[in-house]
Amino acid sequence: MSKQLHVISFDNPFPPNYGGVIDVYYKLKALFEAGVEINLHVFEYGRERSAELSKICKTVNYYPRRTFVNPFVGALPYIVSTRNDATLLQNLLKDKAPILFEGLHSCYFLNEPLLANRLKIVRMHNIEHDYYRKLEEIEGNFFKKYFFAKEADRLTKFEEILNHANHVLAISPNDQANLTKRFNNIKLLPAFHANKEVSTKIGLGKFALYHGKLSVGENDEAARFLVNEVFNNINIPFIIAGNNPSAALQKAVENNPHIQLLRHASTEKITQLTQDAQVNILPTFQSTGIKLKLINVLYQGRWALVNNLMVENTGLADLCCVANTAQNMKTELKRLMDLPFDEINLANRKQVLSTAFCNQTNVKILIGLM
Image 1: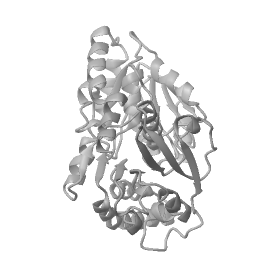
Image 2: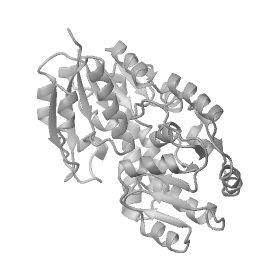
Image 3: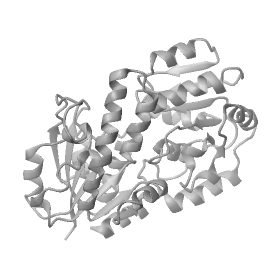
């Protein structure tokens, strides 16, 4: 008899076109391929429903996210209080199957007394209060800044609910170390992703690329840093791909004819750009979680130029070129733009990635906990 599992997702995981839902969708797919029957529960708020989920899940249940809730009021984090639906609890109680909570966002019912005897697993996508504290630091709008500060405080307190989980799955060694300081039920489960094999092209590309969801403050900050401090006076073609860039980023790009901003690039287009670029440059100013776009770059692209925060304690540093200042990034860019990616680099990359980031290997860890 095949195993059954309830999965509560913070957002519609299809299409898998941004960080968190990439991990959710490809985890669902790996579970399905391993013979697990999935009852999926989705909090939706804007993304269209897709028949693709029904192909890999036994049932797909949708619940509206209660975004009308005042984000400044209440003891619960806004990302949790808006994902609260009585019908979800009723559906979870229809059987005794284990429950996988995707992200702290989905943990409203984690300490529900009616679920006290159920096997409960929480997938942590990052350290949420650290993430919101960083959003507070880089936000210029007073009201948003206040919200991020308040949310970080609420998330710090709410995190204690993880004591009610049988297992908490950290997505990176960094997060595992962080969570283990406060909880006894932490295990590492590396990120799930779209790649089955390394598709990196040998040889030389003609441009550098940064891509990310630019509506996320951290990504917009990284893009502006690259435009204003790295590519500001070097004549290397540079493409930034991502939706919803800020006005500040758009203005910065206008003054640099060698920089191109692609605002509506599809997933397929970004994959093509990643493969064709000579250098994928990915700085970050937030060390929690793991950046799935880095994994994609290493599976699909040539050279990856990053800073320490992107790769620290991930096991991926040896596959990247690391520079931590704007001047060092310029120096590395000039070197890498003329350095062909060869078969030796490719073989090393394949060996490392097939060991640590194989979906089929990692889903066995999850099934073993069930």
